[in-house]
Length: 116
Length: 111
Picture 1 (spheres, chains in turn orange, cyan):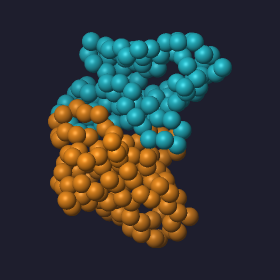
Picture 2: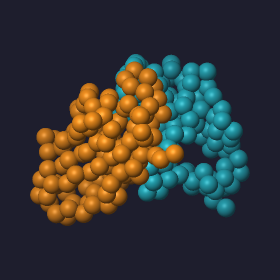
Picture 3: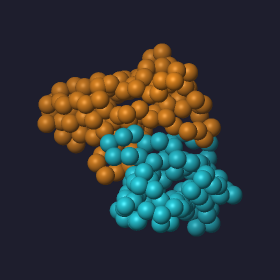
């Protein structure tokens, strides 16, 4: 079956531009996560959705970062006024269950963002 | 101290060798533990969950030591295809969705 998909796969932005990254989770998955992965590091938690509710956005680095999942399926991570330090791979993951159930996370291929 | 710590490696081992990685975690309230595998420029994929009693899946064995707050991964009879980064993942606290990833340990299996 189809896995998690993300688009675009690569994005080059000039400093100060706004970008939008899309995630299509596995159909029916309740939980959706966004992570940021810098080179040589593990993924770092950004935000979590259970269906359409954003239950935790504590990992978002600044108020330039915004995420939504309005219908409980597709999610978009938006970064306003991009800075060079935003350059990273942005990973989306989904899992079948909701909060409080330790669960496998299925990752998408990521969007590699480069800010010049 | 980082919440989840791993030796970044690289571990260079010959084919057929046995290799072990450890990972330490700082939050004693953590209850769920996993090993994920990440190939170069690819997404992480679940390798195995780690249970209190320890668990084995083919050539891979995972163990949990709650008293010392570490988990381990043992790979026997290493294959070239085992070359990857192995990420230790711990949930922040019992019953939460927030998973903390280690920086990963790089393994290179040499012919």
